[in-house]
Length: 64
Image (spheres, rainbow, N blue to C red):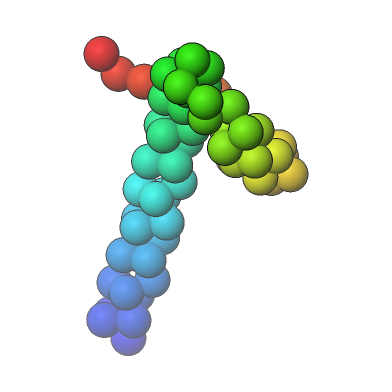
């Protein structure tokens, strides 16, 4: 039972890390992609995030 609980915790943590990384990448695309011909890619990804709503639709600013 403890092992199953740890697996669930690991899966949740991994999902959180993946979402955070995706949001950071999207924020970078918004900043760096304007002059690089990546606007269409950014819009496609933006449409995916717009459908999510709720707590997942937060703005992330890149560190640095």
